Image 1: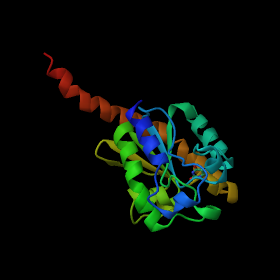
Image 2: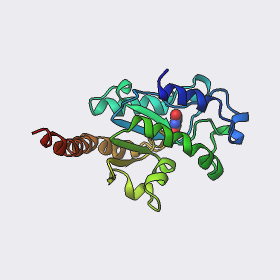
Image 3: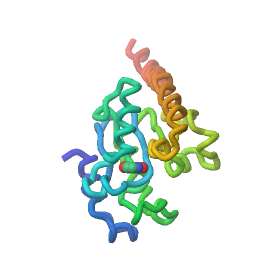
Length: 198
Ligand code: URA
């Protein structure tokens, strides 16, 4: 069993907050263990709670389309959430729930080691762009250590506010350049080691 599968089994048994009493299934996330590109949503909704899989409802179908727009398949990226269990009535996650759940996301990131992390919506944005607002920071990236963070509106926002579709689609089209920058960073990291061979 891989370390990530073991971690997901651990997450599935989590009872660290009240949400454990309301959930049908835990939704740890899914994707390749070595994904370079990783998306972080907010929390599972009804469909995700039923299936145990992230982004499988309407917002998920739109996310799949967005991923397709940059030439990727869903199976090539990792999809996670800030919160692993559905909040009742799809209410916003509470600060205590976010805190109780944060170690799981951190452990996932430690194992997967993505190069680019896309935050979807304000809850995942708040983790990596503290003090910013989504209306200002969407479509922008920032580098911290070896990871580039890129902020986007949540795909569900376009389902409620049709005019955001264009903004979201313009933002996702910036990702290939961000991925290329991440690729260059990786090459630079490897270069001194290659020189040492001679
Ligand atoms: N919205 C999210 O933020 N995450 C999901 O998994 C589904 C919908």
